[in-house]
Image (cartoon, rainbow, N blue to C red; front, side):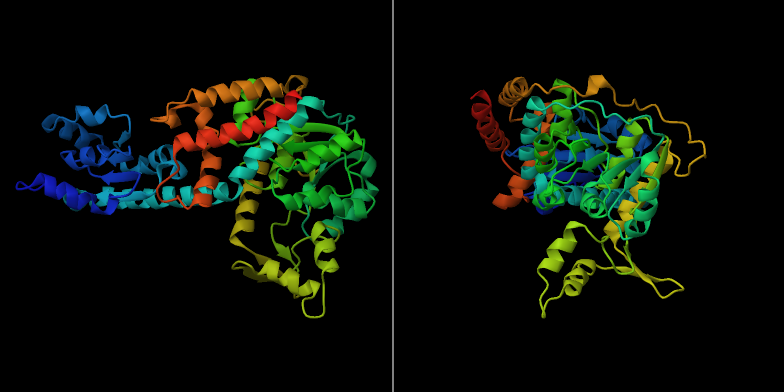
Length: 481
């Protein structure tokens, strides 16, 4: 696997592509000399090393002393090429570790071509997933962090209760797609028999049609979400808000004296907070509020659900139903040279689309993102134990517990701030990812790396912790006063 003349020079040549990388994948272990040299760098890089299978790895152990590598805290050794994707995803934290490099040992690749092909495939999958995660976290990380602290503060002074479903057996989950317009008449007709759950974007359209929902669900952190509740919320409704969502929803519920349920989505800080003081769990993994709304009705014990507006496509070329925030925004800014139709078209075609034409000539556009949302929606619906037709028995529910009164209690915000600050101060910056409190900062790390232009080299753990402590301190003093 190696030269017999100058192992050191060979190692330098192998590592030339990883000279500044903070994380490396080594395809083929060989003598391990090149891996040891990479890990000896003072900036503390991390690595995964993969072999062609358990048999080759055992054979390698019989001829080479790899005990130092096996014991190294910054190296993960993988015996099977098919497991390399999971190993990278669980070990590589781009915002912290910086750039990624693959270092193949060429004689190993020639000796095990199928293993090398599997490593290449798995690496592409892992890096694509990491890139998508980092892109989202870099955009929203700081906003999620601030929103989480603000919403926990509201949950401490304005605690909600378990929503009362009034014994209704059918939940109507209403999203903001174009088909919502066609469903309004039926929802209005059957209103007394339905527990109406509005996705945040659909809420203004329902109000415009004279329908006050029983519940509004929101998971979006962005500032534009404030426009969804600009008219306030019904006093008799329940607002379910992901703890990282826009605090405007919590504030609107508090002003109206409506019921507020602040729930813990998938953000690591949300789950960390839920471990300190109870918060109901909310599935936000799909990134779409429609799935989160389905999760809520399942958690409340509904078995039959009626769905409208969950199109995940631009039906008839329309992105949303009439009455949503875009109607006010685009119609209100329409001019001769930039009409509302121009603005809607710009939204529809801002990314590549696929076009389907129905027999009646109606055109539907789909994007890759909307298609992924549709797939996530269908997967959840099929596995959640919900029936979409009245009178049809629902499949058996999975073992996930439903919400209870114990999940929805006043949040101990001041106690949490003290606990969280202490946990951050106790982190050893030489191995920060080993601490659950530091994991809560990873989305913030991505945002910080984007802001400072350090995505390639990663952020400094100590600096990130100090930043988080400064933000926490900003909430502590007003809370005490």
